[in-house]
Image 1: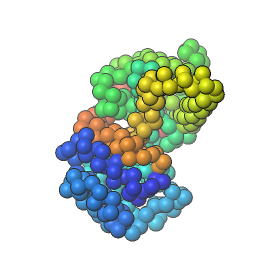
Image 2: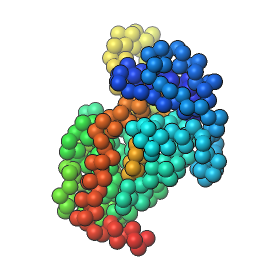
Image 3: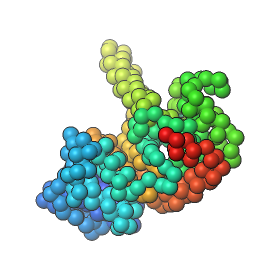
Length: 339
């Protein structure tokens, strides 16, 4: 029921996902009167779906604390609860991000030893895509949490990018070991010195994210969210400049016509809908946040992320990796205990 369009996007998005994965079934939580008309437009999806009706909906303007107090029985709460009960393998929502994080953390609960789950996302690069986290679930992070983020991101890279031993980089203000705040330098030392199921490449600077030199980029949430929003804004700015340049004169318009095949390929490569779907990592269950303003194709991409993570049993493998990390370091447990 969340997002800018609610069932008008979610239902056709599920229909696209069903075409890609015919064995999937869907539980659709929300107002049956609003969902059913859209479902009737997709006969194949109709046979693979069940509507669980509720009048209660978490609004986009609701604060997380309000959503927790009043949201029990809402479509978002019931969807998350279905994962906890084993009735669903993952949940996807385009609704209120803060409310979804709060409910997922309360209902699914963090993994053993995890204090702060992180939100991850796919970032387009020259070689394909990489995973970046945290993108705003937390403000600040200890060295222990940054080390945990590295394993969380690697687990997602295995599931979504199909890379068994991902290259992991730690975002910093320089690649020299003397640069950066103490938490980042300590996390760097831990990741470099311990044998983990990743290929740790060290510090990465912001201008290297899009070069594809790493499969996973680790950063605390404040800087990660700023980096994400800056990149999105820059992409929109560049697109506007290209449109302006290609329509500025008759010669430019002719050039644009001749180059339209290449321009379409560029547009497809930069299409943010292809990278939609940010999972909350570090929970005992899979919860995916879709962009609220996406369309059906973008929502289908978010479902795809959840499907890949469920198929690869990412929660079980991540739990094992984190247990190994905590066993090798010791320091992360002490750091959390003293905070």
